[in-house]
Length: 268
Image 1 (cartoon, rainbow, N blue to C red):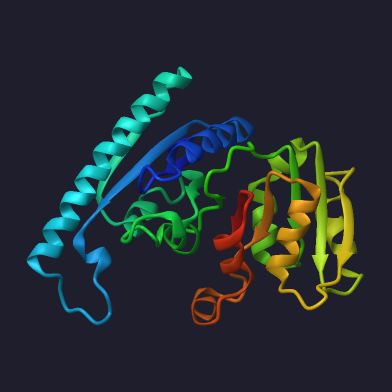
Image 2: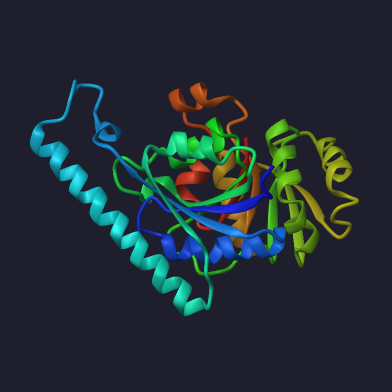
């Protein structure tokens, strides 16, 4: 079996430099090498429900755009490696990100990617492919993030399997952080005892607190807490209600992914 590694998934050049910076740090903390992946997707990735097929012009335009983006990613990676004295390997694929993420299943310890809404049409299912279909722990990098990751962490506590999987996947980050705050939003005070049971031995100096939502959604409470404590990472479980329900009625995970201004360390 291949040794594990961290994958930096670069759908485009948008956010790619930030992802490479964060992936390098993730690899250092997890003590794993980093590989880069880019997928040149086909025209089928942008067919709308109302369309049976793309016009010849639309298909040709999309193919040319994808080829151009692949070359731009290749150039960006080459420049980044040169500037950082690194030699991170780049794997290029054709097809779709769903199949590529399955290709990495069982080998990738984590996938680092840009917030999906920042990516070009045809590449906005990257997170679902990595997190929900291939079940990789992921680090979602917000737009223009330059603050590093892992020095100060916030854990959005909910006693759920996804969060416990996130804690297990990112244990080295939690253990190495200078400070860890554990926040339970709008729950019974007894839940903090479960949080201490899960994290106490790992992070003896962690701070635990309850926060009343005061009419706010959980995602916005967590984002306010992340801002006030100036963290550089938010550890959360993702889509604990399931993929289909969150697609129909967007929940905490969807709001965090779209609106977080700090990296998200997530597992589903």
